[in-house]
Length: 455
Image (cartoon, rainbow, N blue to C red; front, side, top):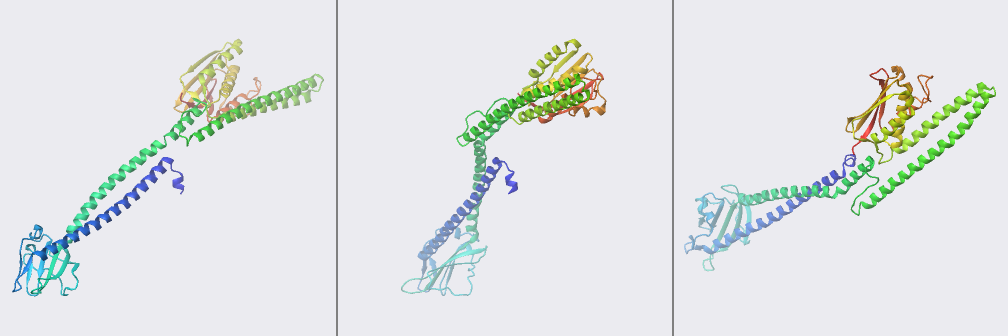
């Protein structure tokens, strides 16, 4: 049962069709073969009875009891030697044989023939094989009243050959019919499952962002399912929008309260309570980091589960690069953007903006004069975003540490230690990965791998 539960619907239908066609063909073959066997056997025996009647009519017994034929026997097969077709006429004192017996009488055994039975059939061994024998007891004429025994014998191989030839032709016919029916069943199954293939393609288009819902005409049996799925997609989209709005409202409310508490901490510092002020401000900073991190994670987690998540790397990256140039124009940093792919990524635009914004902001803070961004294909299903700077870089032991929330390797540098942590969290939520390395100019290299989508 487990094996069949893992089979595709197509394989199940085709396997069931093959099974029923096979069983039906075997049953049909058996029925037709049985009908033909009975019909041919009946005709065969009827023909032998006709030969017995013909022999009775053309056999003559004279007054001395001698046997003779008044006319030639109609079937010439009884004339050829060892043809398997034999006849014999017997009386008490005389015997007449067909030419095929070449003078040797049939060995009918020692038991006397029952003259009370008009026709008698049985099987015995013959010159060329088992014989089917039809016998008839009669009298030559009312005048002499001489008992006469008429025997017609035919080799059973002739009947077997007729039945065997028919069965062979019938078997090949059923094999051809079964193959044709199996092919027809496979074609009909494929045709019947076309709507599900289109449904699968529709899902792929929704997940890739090409369409926002399942489109096209479907059979009436599938239409309710399409309608329910479109409703589910729309409901999920509405829930995502509400979740983002609630996350934004929560962030706004908490940031406002934290700003007030932070301001009170600075007031305490002005009043001379420096130790209490530092403790309050430190905890407020930690709280802010966690709020930003978990709100970003919750928003990205909801978006990552949504079908139709699709973003153009070029459309998201270039505006952020231009914004960073303006924001850090006093640093006079040269930035090169090299986009070598036209694929989109299966990442929400807001989250992709968050990723680019954080890695570029970190790069601008440490770079001396140069930043390079290269976007390229890794394979059909993945792209790489490579960012190099010419800053001081990080030692290898710091590469994992800086991805932790609130951790900064250089405590003197500006920032809250949250940027790279959010980047890795977002990348992982969308099924990607990121790593740090040394750049060619001894700065820091961050490489991000994201799932790609073909347009």
